[in-house]
Length: 309
Image (cartoon, rainbow, N blue to C red):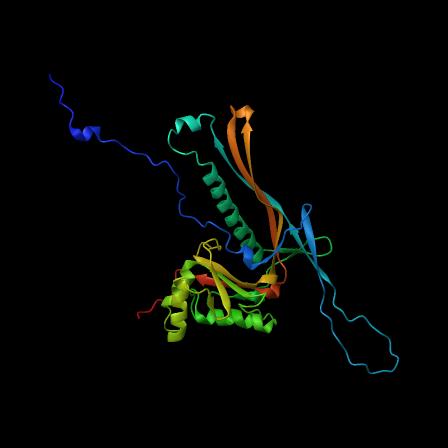
């Protein structure tokens, strides 16, 4: 029985890429620049002193007794935690990869992306989490319920809408937190893509002028609306009912302490057959500095107000 002869297609070569591409991901920290950053940190934790409010009173007697009218000073504490990420390359990878470049530099870049996302997670956790306060940092101060915009503001449970933005802005005004986008202490609003989409589609509440502004916002042409600098993050927490917690704050409302910034080390490990280890590490922590400087906004992503244009 004769063997069929090969056809020309059988000789077509297969070519392999020689470079590496990163999969889709958040590649940088989007929130680090929106908060106060302290890189002068030594030790496991650090305290921050806060001056209490001063009060006054009318003087009603001559040569009367002087009293101390200053409210107690306060402290906020940050405990720093270490993080790292590691990648190993076998001693023969250079040879076995052939013409494919070993992705050492791309590995470092990938690890830097992971660090950026971790910084944002630490910031988001601190915005709504318990803050360590008191003389020795053992008191846990929870997020103030009065600083929360409920999921039902504006009617039934809903996604982000104009009513919720007004409610958040009102809380800042009542608290005398008056940051503007051009100030050193600007108002920041962190939302996910769902909230941006709902603002754009919520034409029943947003005027034509506002619609044009939000359309430019979603398109990435501007990043300001209603005095907020708006930043998108898909790292915001979302519960089992698909309600996402978004945050509005001013820069001074959140402190980020960096004990060690992103640092990469490349080492040969003799005990691992001279494997190349690329390891990056960093140490970071954060705390909410004042409850009045942060507002949470509950947004139901299952109940978006979508109207036909």
